[in-house]
Figure (tube, one colour):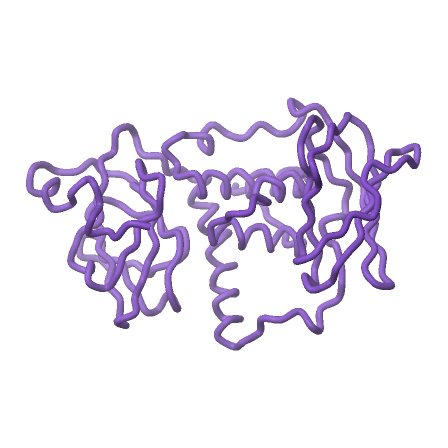
Length: 290
């Protein structure tokens, strides 16, 4: 990650030469500690810091503690930018090369993700971090899950991450395409499969418990089409992926939650993607904005 002081656009030089275009230029990807230890200053007004907070040209961040550290995702930057307390007087800026990427869907994404972050930080503060008293369960499979057919991996998760599981996936005929594969850490990802359209049964054994689910594989064209507002290339990739997965999870009666989860199942995930992945595994419902 690069320090904000080294930001290639040269904040102060840009401010001195011309007014920057209005619009969101990025968002808060992560921060150290609790949100109450920071504030964002925008045109003289204070804004509370939170995960995924959209940022505009000229915003400044202030931290109460010397260990203040905020990770930013800004347009035109493949890597995160790190803000430290020493950068508090430096306005955040980037050059907008097209109309801003923000939309009502992204407002809804922030409104859905930031409470998950607040809850997680509160748990960390009170050291509620283990799953020793948690029951093994797979809320994801309370309803049949519709996913895209084709050559791909599939993934799903369960509560009680410490529980090692055995996964079997069967065709309607009973023939197994996955037989007793091991999974741990609360998330299982398959090897690449040539998944034909049709119905599949999932059996997950964990100790003396067993969970079952139904997967319906369909032609990818039959999945809900992601809105254009969430496919804009200037949306930083972690936010784009989070927003698309959240939108898909909120479709219908939850039958696309597994497909949404699989959008987030890569090895490297941003804080917002991790939070959404955990929420999907836990069966948290999401509703589309009105």
